[in-house]
Length: 337
Ligand SMILES: [Fe+2]
Image (cartoon, rainbow, N blue to C red; front, side, top):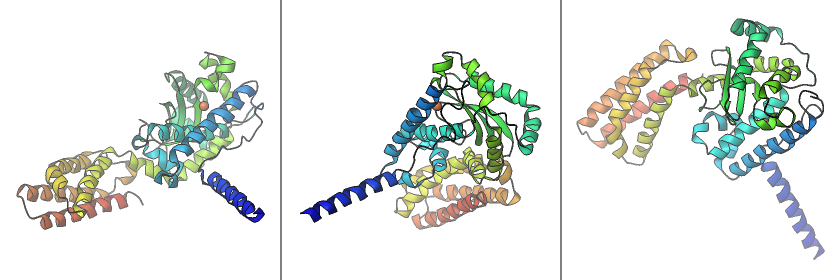
């Protein structure tokens, strides 16, 4: 009996440990004490913000992902296609990512300065540090309701100031300006209300006393080398995504011998191919090779639409469609390397 109880207890323990290990996200520790950012950010705000708010984003995210295919994705992959995620995943994945960055770019009474590379980029993009601070504060002040102000590295490798609502961020496809954030200012009331009440402007003046420019500088260097930049650039190419959508919604049914979608949508696919050809090709994909492949895609889509209107046999349609599908993947591949 004792033995059985022991095994049952062991099994329960293993199951608990496994469940804990399976939760993909956990709360990162602060690199400083909650009191360390006083008097600019008070200890109670830090404690509630980190231990309660951030923890809640993590709990909700883990709960929403549990048992789904999305568990295998990285946080960046979850956010990139935020428009296709549920509200819960979008808000809580953003909440976790944004706050993890926020704790990292703060430091006790930071009197740090940007490292040389970042300083040069600030001077080049904004003329001076003062202008950059003004622009970030302006973005933070004018963000209606809750959200974030950001300094980001764009896919072109430039610095840019922008802002997003709620827990969105510029990695997400729902954002107007895209890139990798290297500095974020949380303007949710939970970030400042206990000390500053409704005076968001005072909080924004104070925050510069605790920004850790060493870590922002490191993030700048890392962002420039990060393959995610190219992924964002491709992800932001609207016309490529729109063509992809029609292609996948017509090609995959053919694999199951369903020709109805392509018979109904070959004209739409041609229109999307032409829109892709006429679109502004993102800088790093603007090569002769890719332009040639897009031209061939238009030619293929034109032929496909033409034979479809002549009501050819399904096998002929299938063969044409397979060629077009391969061509599209050639473009996708060229954009990934
Ligand atoms: Fe927050």
